[in-house]
Length: 124
Image 1: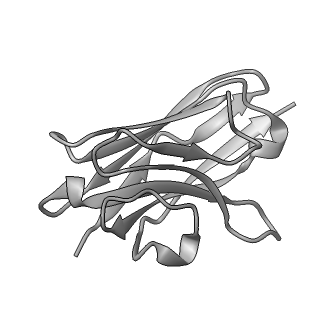
Image 2 (image 1 turned 60 degrees about the vertical axis):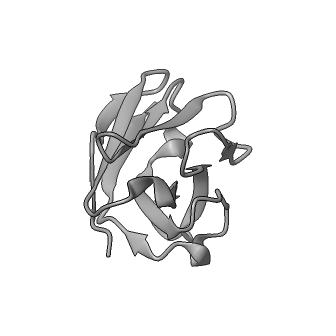
């Protein structure tokens, strides 16, 4: 069982940066691939970024590639999402998720554990 708690969301202007954090409970954190997903009002939840259990492999959605960076600190049971050059279309609730097994994947249905999410609002 893994419990996830996100933090770091807020209201920013276009072009600003934010760093989201996700604290995970439980042991053997490195056995879990971690992902960030987002859901805007009226839209489906969509994949943003994922990182393998050892932090070596990462994948990004096309709309954040080059702007967002996912990282993790297995000693602290933390995963982060550094978001740069934010755009109004990045406005959404951002959730972190954990997948059993260290292989990073982009499919949301493969993630078993989800946090409550943190709101990110980008004004133009």
